[in-house]
Image (cartoon, rainbow, N blue to C red; front, side, top):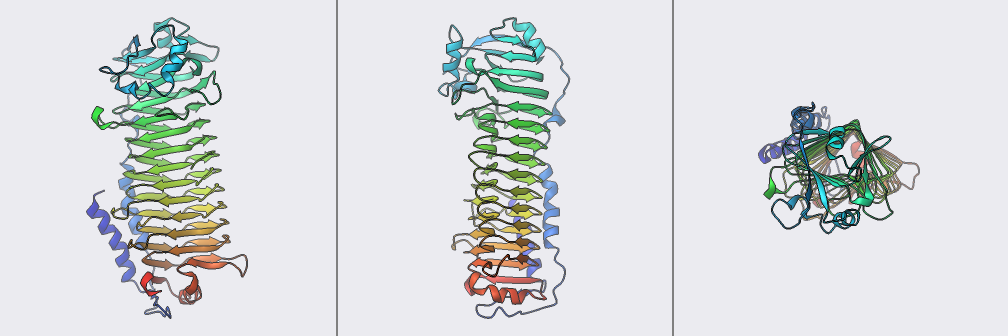
Length: 478
């Protein structure tokens, strides 16, 4: 989406508000200038126009993959020499534990299984290697005990069960295509707080994980936290990953994107440690996932992405906020999610670049019973909140606390704020706020409807809302 189009959409939304009759507040009285408002439709127009563009940001990997196993690949055992031509894809792993563990297991300088120039299945891999210390058949499937590298123009198909031996430094490094279809991939022989196998896809690679189970992967080291896609501009085009209808459990970070694009749909993320999903400098679409019990951080962490789309996810039990957005991200679409019972805020947005031309849309979400606020933003970015339910959060239903230097505009329409701990809506430092058809319920007379800059004028806001559709509040008029 180009900047001019986003700017046009942004100000079209405000113009529709400005030229539709609404009540305008003043510094002292908040007396209405006009009444008899018309139906609001600016939000529906805004979201409907942009959602088709979101669908093309992250094309499904399966659309470009031939899922049939074709010409057989060549399999070799190759020494992992660092600091030489061709070693860049594992150079970053030299000091993170993999080489040390592999050296203890292998009698000589560590070697890896290298796949080139074709397709291969686990069965075919076993038939070619013929060494149970490297790759052996088990009662349930297969076990790999060496690092495994899939080169460009090669494809590894994983169906059935693949155990990755933690005590030998097993890992999968993908430069070509990694296809896990109806498979189970898990680490075995794990020692607490030590090395755990991981999947790492580089650059112009494709990774498809469908109807599969991945668990016990990753540890807290660089590019080794679980399933990672990383793109280095000097070494090729950005990679792509699609994860669909799968279970990702007990990882340091289940899915990390550091560049490239990701499509993440209908998965179950459970009992992961730092994040369930961590995406940075990427395009990502996350929809219809269940994310529970992320121990230390946010369930979903998104930073500095080009486009990010979160639709109909359920996020609960996170150690910090359920969803955390930060950095210089462009437009963010958060639609139809249920974010509840998280350790901090339901959704937390901070450090977004106030000068970019994107905006935040929060539509049709349920944010309930979070330990701080349902929604909290400290970012000076144009935001639209419509048709959300903020219920039972211990601090505020929704809170905006931004730098007064930023000319921030908010549109808050058709939301329900129900028995949140301190107040329904907290706004501080926002230049212009448009309120429309919001319902705020309190559980006692000691609760506030509004907090922050609006607390001192909340009675006037309430009176001006009766019989009117829109209220505009300017910071310099309070």
